[in-house]
Image 1 (cartoon, rainbow, N blue to C red):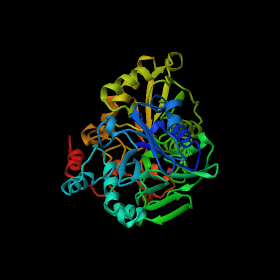
Image 2: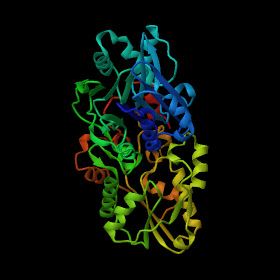
Image 3: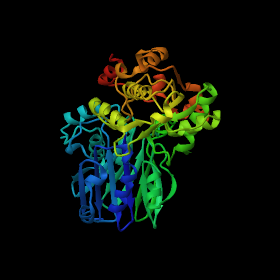
Length: 457
């Protein structure tokens, strides 16, 4: 759950990275950082906070060079401290390296223990630092070979952009869990987690970084190498359901249209007699549009969002999450009073947020509240970079749909079926990771601490 950006060959690389991170702010709100290079010297600035809080014009002016790598962070591995901000910046020998990582390594604990036994000293608690240590161990073979050796060892989800003085290198895990795209900008190149970053700086999308690929961008242009073989893909389906911006294209599809298809599938599975369809904004907007179009029901905004409050799912603490729910959405009483409503949302994780929202709609005078969820029940935690907690905190892991309906005080609750989700995705379930729904993890869970999370009540 992070956003990464890379820029090569632009005289204002730092500003391009800044605007790219601004577009990717939804992927992480804890910290932001940019490292630049002029081919010889590297410059850095990282801090806790939002992109607009961390950077200003004087700071960006000091970040010189035509190369840049940037990062916005939401922590799934490693605590929220200044030392854990990215890009992770080190000097090894006479070379500087800055690494931005999106994803989670599932064998991080094992690798860290082995590296520490061999004498490695760690500066942070991030799994991303492990990648740098492993690359450094094989640098005598050359950078591409060092990255290839590292990819043979690390397991899990990683989309990585690495800056090394005069070049930018991107590499991606063989399953392609997290998105990473390549674009062209004024004769240079740009890399980003999502294409919405390209749109903001008017870059041209070229292609995605392939799963298992190593892409080197330097004065010779683009050079692609096979890192590790990709036998099958496991794109994170939740990127489509919730996490990516609707104006982005990821994994070869447009997010907005994908979410509308989820609404079409909901209409096919659960047509309702209601006065109107309404989303919980903004996460439910596009599936609600699809549902309304498919059923012919009117579409209304029954609750209004305060856009100056951060995304509740991103907030790291439960107390902050509850506060944000109360501040974030306000029911429109005149629209809701006495009405039968079909409420569409993208997901139910813990259930606490939805319970508060449903209560507010009921208190506003809604006569009947039916809720439609545009994904199946989330029953298993994610170890690849989405912040789903232990099974005990996932409401669908221990409760039936009927029990959840009663807990939320709904008149009706319907989850999109797994079959419906796969149909909306194009029918090829083998290309997506569905582990949060069915518990089938593409990369096996080997670490005891992960098993504790999986089994914890």
